[in-house]
Length: 226
Image (tube, rainbow, N blue to C red; front, side):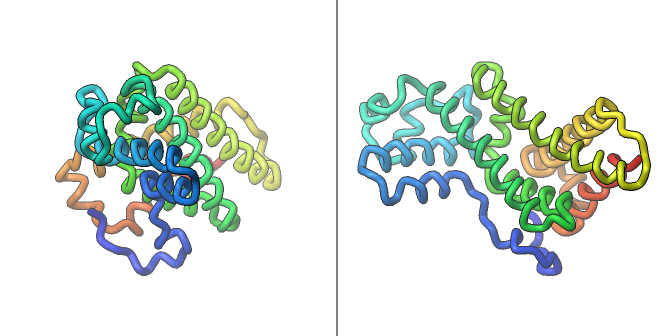
């Protein structure tokens, strides 16, 4: 786990960004059926923290949710239907939280978005692992993730292009998109090694979230410079 970093002066530092809790919060005031469905979805999130979706069973999910096996099939046709729906909702959640973080701190949007992404990754490791490594059998989720990725990077590129234009630099959209995709891939690879694989060499130099945020933000800032 990261060591706490109280020196980060940002409202993001205390935000949990845990999707399983968000599912239950949204369903709290709704009718019983919707609460039960949310409990199944939340149980999946917890199960993915310790199991690959390829070996996860409906029984595992029902045990985690504390529900009878037959209850599952009232809401979902099979395990993949559940995983696909949860992953699609999680993609929307990631997009919303990263956008909100950037809007909260427009003067340092790159750092705010990076901070949010690290917290999202750390607190939703099973879902992030599913997004990055297990979407082959979930074509709708794979397309949604690709669309999310492109939409986010287009926003980064548009913001960068505006800054370049103010400084009188010509803008090559495709070049900026190539850089953004490469930087995004580097960020995911770094966080995967740190938070999913628990690479001991990375852990030894990455225990302070503030320093990790500084490093990844610097890569984005330098990588998108003219």
